[in-house]
Amino acid sequence: WPIDELGDLAPENIEAMMNLLAKQNIQILSATPTADRHVLALFKRRYLLTQQKLHEVELPPSKLEQLLNARTDKENDYV
Image (cartoon, rainbow, N blue to C red):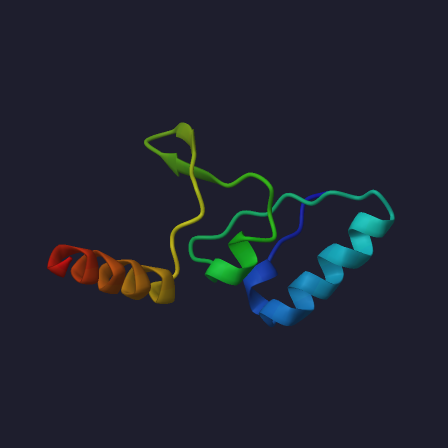
Protein backbone atom coordinates (compact mmCIF):
# COMPACT_ATOMS: atom_id res chain seq x y z
CA TRP A 1 0.00 0.00 0.00
CA PRO A 2 1.31 3.49 -0.72
CA ILE A 3 1.61 5.84 2.23
CA ASP A 4 2.06 9.59 1.74
CA GLU A 5 3.60 12.05 4.19
CA LEU A 6 5.34 9.29 6.16
CA GLY A 7 7.99 11.80 7.25
CA ASP A 8 5.37 13.78 9.18
CA LEU A 9 5.16 11.00 11.77
CA ALA A 10 7.64 10.47 14.58
CA PRO A 11 10.09 7.62 13.76
CA GLU A 12 8.85 5.49 16.67
CA ASN A 13 5.27 5.84 15.39
CA ILE A 14 6.35 4.84 11.90
CA GLU A 15 7.98 1.72 13.31
CA ALA A 16 4.88 0.86 15.36
CA MET A 17 2.64 1.37 12.32
CA MET A 18 4.86 -0.80 10.12
CA ASN A 19 4.91 -3.56 12.74
CA LEU A 20 1.12 -3.46 12.96
CA LEU A 21 0.77 -3.59 9.17
CA ALA A 22 3.30 -6.43 8.90
CA LYS A 23 1.21 -8.52 11.31
CA GLN A 24 -1.65 -8.14 8.81
CA ASN A 25 0.71 -9.05 5.93
CA ILE A 26 0.48 -5.52 4.51
CA GLN A 27 3.60 -4.04 2.95
CA ILE A 28 3.95 -0.35 2.30
CA LEU A 29 5.58 1.81 -0.32
CA SER A 30 6.60 5.36 0.45
CA ALA A 31 8.60 8.10 -1.25
CA THR A 32 10.34 10.91 0.55
CA PRO A 33 12.96 13.50 -0.36
CA THR A 34 14.60 13.01 3.04
CA ALA A 35 14.29 10.27 5.63
CA ASP A 36 15.69 9.45 9.00
CA ARG A 37 18.22 6.57 8.93
CA HIS A 38 16.10 4.73 11.51
CA VAL A 39 13.07 4.95 9.21
CA LEU A 40 15.08 3.82 6.19
CA ALA A 41 16.20 0.76 8.16
CA LEU A 42 12.54 -0.31 8.49
CA PHE A 43 12.34 -0.97 4.74
CA LYS A 44 13.76 -4.13 3.17
CA ARG A 45 14.56 -2.27 -0.05
CA ARG A 46 15.51 1.35 -0.60
CA TYR A 47 15.73 3.05 -3.98
CA LEU A 48 17.06 6.35 -5.23
CA LEU A 49 15.51 7.98 -8.27
CA THR A 50 17.96 10.06 -10.31
CA GLN A 51 17.43 11.34 -13.83
CA GLN A 52 14.40 9.07 -14.16
CA LYS A 53 16.47 5.96 -13.34
CA LEU A 54 15.89 3.76 -10.32
CA HIS A 55 18.90 2.59 -8.27
CA GLU A 56 18.77 0.25 -5.29
CA VAL A 57 20.86 1.67 -2.45
CA GLU A 58 22.28 0.33 0.79
CA LEU A 59 21.43 1.81 4.14
CA PRO A 60 23.97 4.56 4.80
CA PRO A 61 26.21 4.02 7.82
CA SER A 62 25.26 5.90 10.95
CA LYS A 63 27.41 8.76 12.18
CA LEU A 64 28.30 6.62 15.21
CA GLU A 65 29.42 3.73 12.96
CA GLN A 66 31.54 6.15 10.92
CA LEU A 67 33.21 7.55 14.05
CA LEU A 68 33.87 4.08 15.48
CA ASN A 69 35.26 2.84 12.16
CA ALA A 70 37.53 5.88 11.88
CA ARG A 71 38.76 5.32 15.43
CA THR A 72 39.40 1.61 14.76
CA ASP A 73 41.26 2.45 11.55
CA LYS A 74 43.37 5.01 13.41
CA GLU A 75 44.17 2.50 16.16
CA ASN A 76 45.13 -0.13 13.58
CA ASP A 77 47.56 2.34 11.99
CA TYR A 78 49.49 2.47 15.25
CA VAL A 79 49.77 -1.33 15.59
